[in-house]
Length: 105
Length: 135
Image (cartoon, rainbow over all chains, first blue to last red; front, side):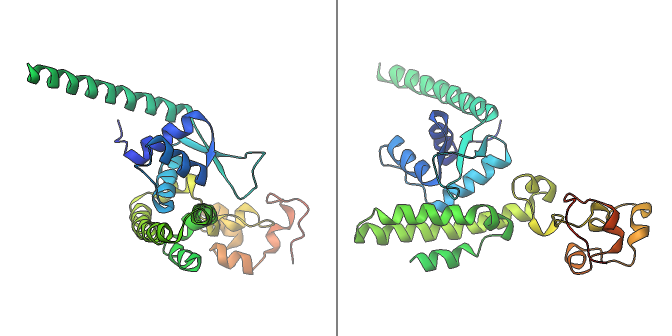
């Protein structure tokens, strides 16, 4: 399984809801992380390029936006990868919670 | 600041710029318009740092990734066959002898082909059937 960085995880999570273009992604990721993460355009588009290469997301034409605003949407492979990553995080959270509880006793 | 951003974008590889630079400019402009003066300076600092790191990462990716794999998402437009140039001529020199024999007098690079439109193309459509080929 490929390592998923935080920007990639946030981008996939954002696109899991609905297709978005670049600036909408920046805003949504800021909201998702409660203002903690604000991706620069360099980081965002670098991650988008890698995700396109891996076919985890795809470009598509959105009818209600201008032609210059290219929208992106998650693919089936990207959704599967996001689910795997969330499962991994759940297991980690459970393990950490269990250890915290046992150490308190 | 916008001008500085555009200049820094030129640090990226050409194929990356061809696909994503315009989108990056639009996203930068949209984000910059919403900020106050103090926040704007901090924002620019972050953006420029991100661009420098991003350009470096993209060059490393370009140099370490097979061009065939990279070409799936970032096709090199210099390698694309121009309209009106048949595939045999465009790819002359890149295929076995039987294909390149007929076009040995022609340039083998895409740049050369665009300058020397060969008569051999006249019978082939090359993607655009209604394009007249000079003889």
